[in-house]
Every structure is written in structure tokens, then in C-alpha cells.
Image (cartoon, rainbow, N blue to C red; front, side):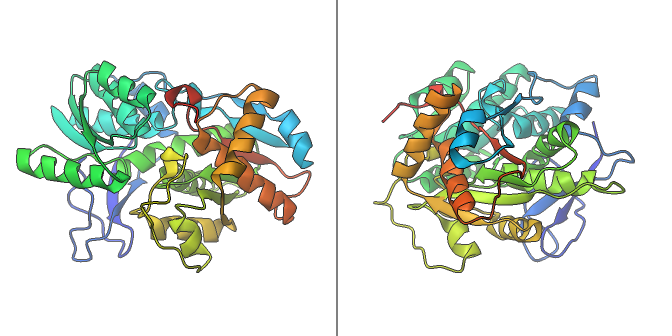
Length: 363
């Protein structure tokens, strides 16, 4: 596989420890780490996995990119595209990050790990762990969709259901990891997980010479950050335009939108959202997300569950796409950006359909 270093997002210090368990800077500032590809020739990280003799792959990446005609017509857009991430091996975009994380863990002879998830990442890591003979302990909210819970269990992972808010699963996972001396491979914190997401931008750059906008349903922001760093790598020595990266969140849980727009928002556990995939009240890489969005020239917006459900219905009945409700928030935000003339008729827009609707119960 490619050669990677880990360095601090804040102070830039290169770390002596670049193991799969490394998360925080060891040079005093204790900030989260980012991963940097230092190979002579930067390539799609998923391609490097396939090229490695001892690696495992489930066929992740290379998801279809299709034109969305009817919804495009509704919004007056002539170049609207969807990248069907729900056609990944475990039916979500998380397979991109899991592939890299588990292959590195396998190289380090990790036999067991702990992870917390709202569902998709847990299912994904469980699948890759199964094919690598690694035992996975997955902590999830007891409110997670049955399809996601069934996936985790069928792959042989140890499922730990936790009552209450999503953050409770993180607390319990960390506690279990420490008490049992088992590595904590959090997809939310792992610099390698985000690095695996770079593959999304490599694939898009092979399809298009330029993209004007990408809209992400954003919780912890791994796909957005991976895409940002991927385009930075691709642009080295090449004339390629950085797309404007936009955040889509729920009005009930909008920490990124509030931070980006300097508005007041306070987490209220009584205010829930159908967008379970982005129901994150305190994203650990918040500052990185804000920086990436601002430097790309993007925006951060939210919409109500009612607005998103309307677009969820349009996706199914107009385009034949059965997505998680989380994905539909990108389309309700797209409508706002079109109405505000941030996005115009002939600009090229891509929206990732991050997860399958088969994973959750229709409300």
C-alpha cells in the first residue's frame, strides 16, 4: 500500500507513532491527527489496497455516477449528478474508509478492536473485520435502524446496544476499550478512515475535468474532509478546479451550520431528527470541516425533516433511488442554494447518495 505519515492538524508536527491506534498529537497540543500520503506517486488509496498482495477488498469504490434528470428539471439544473455510494459492498460510503483502516490493522496484526457508530460505519468495519479474521466490538445507539443492526450481527461482530443519545455510544466504547485493553479504532477520529475517503475525489476527477459544487449530508464529515484532501492531492501539478464543498444538516442538529454561520445553536436531546446518519451534536473534526468548506468557497445549510422527506419521496418516485433519509437533506439544501442563486443552471453539481433506504424503517 501507499506510504503514509500522521501529523497534527493544528501544529503540523509529524508523529513518531503512525500506527492504526494513533489519534491525537503527541507533541503537546493533543489535537486530532491527519493522514498524509508521502508516496512518490499519489494514487487512489483504494487502488493501492488492490495492488497490495496481502490486502483484503470487498470491491469497494468505483460506485456509479448517474445524471439526475427529473429532479434537475424540477430545480432548473442541467448538470445534476448523483454518485451512488449505497451500491458499496455494505450499502454505504463508509466502506471507503473501512477498507484502509482494516488493512492497516491487519498489517499490524490487530486481532480485536472497539468502534462506536450510528450504524453504517459499524456494519462496514464489521464486514471488513470478518474477512480479515479480526473480532469487532461495535457500540451503537439502541435506536439505530434494524437493517444496520442486523448487518453488524450477521458479520459476526459483538453488538453492544447503548441507550440514549448517539454520544453515549462513544462514551461506552471508550470505557470498554480502556477496561479491556482493546484498541479503539473510531472511524470518527481515525486519520486513516478519512484518508480512505480520498478515493471519492479520485473517482470524480476521472469522470469530470471540473465540478462546480458537491453537497454532503454531514455529521462527522469524513467524506467531505477526504474529498477536500483528495482534490488537494490531485491538484498538485495539475490544472484542476477545487469544487465548492457544501454541508447539509438537520435544523434540529446543526453544529456545523451554526459554527460556520456564527449563529446560536444549543443541543437539545428532545429535538431529534430522522437523519440518523448525521445526528452528531459535537463533531470532533468541526474546525477542520469549517476550514475545508471556507477554503473551497462552499456553504453550510440545514433543513427540516419535513423538507427532506419531500425530497426523499422525489428521489424514489422521480429517479428510482431508495436512499436513507439522511441523503435527502442534501437535496433540500440544494433547493435553497438554487433559490439563493448560489448554484446556477449550467453548473455541474454532484451529490453522494451515501446509504441505502433498505437499512432503515420508513417513518
